[in-house]
Length: 427
Ligand SMILES: *Cc1c(COP(=O)(O)O)cnc(C)c1O
Image (tube, rainbow, N blue to C red; front, side, top):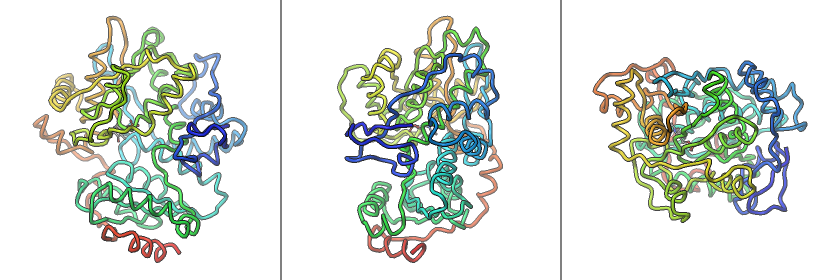
């Protein structure tokens, strides 16, 4: 796979380099120079999930990695299902939360970890990342127990839910977690300082594992095919997919699937009050506001970092702008949607509920709709119990870690203190 830096077309890299590097020069995102297209989509859709995913990722990555290598990565990364669950006659939920940390980020996180195992040739790497919740858990579990890769996760002390914290601070081994006595922005700033510091960047072979990594998007393309494969042929003819969006990585992957030949008529990008994209699609003006806190906190993003990739696909004529509509679901309607879903017999959490609401607002007569269930409702237990007025039980992965001891170090918001800590752990 050849990739181009969207901010500097003179920088062209391989898939392996893009996975190791994350971002290009001037903070530019990498995007494939050419996207493959399947001629016989029905044959692809008829395959089982793992085989089909190997086919898709081999087509995307090209001959840079041998097919057996890709197959090994896929088999180790995708050890759980993505079932399509019927909610009404013509609306389905694609449940992406059956992985170890109960969120769709397991797909991208685990695929990226296994790619790094293959392309780093056993050379030591340090993954340094900041999290406000879900990403930390997915990255920690994806890399836990992998030789020669150490993970350091910074998070704001006391500012994430206890259950979320337990999901990534109780693993130990090669997973090191640090509670920073400040907010999430401070954690991100510390990570940036480390990447700007050659002693640390080169001394510890840093990699960020954040959501702009191309390997994460490539992995996510696979479950869009899996969703459509579970529909009848009639239902595939006029299909709308609704994506709860924050950084817009998930929607980018959906659009790539469409370019590769997946039959999708329309995409809906559902956001919470952080609605930069829906406003942009309506007015043509890009005017981010201050980020506001909502019930769907994994989507509290006002400057979505994957949008330039979607913009590039539109500019290159790969997708038409009219393929995507935006919809903003406010806090009240997020709760309304959760209650409506519960009445239909489907317990959901705020992110998926936003996608559901946005979907039914945009669907037309005769269409089939899929909304993406990006997290297990138990991950947002408090909100779900408050809104629905009914208790929900903890699934095994959450129950297991809830009783374990957290292993985090605590540090002030001070770069020199972090640097000393990193070298004492890993130097
Ligand atoms: C990360 C996340 C999202 C947003 O996905 P993007 O790819 O950033 O748009 C939606 N829902 C949940 C539960 C998430 O964790």
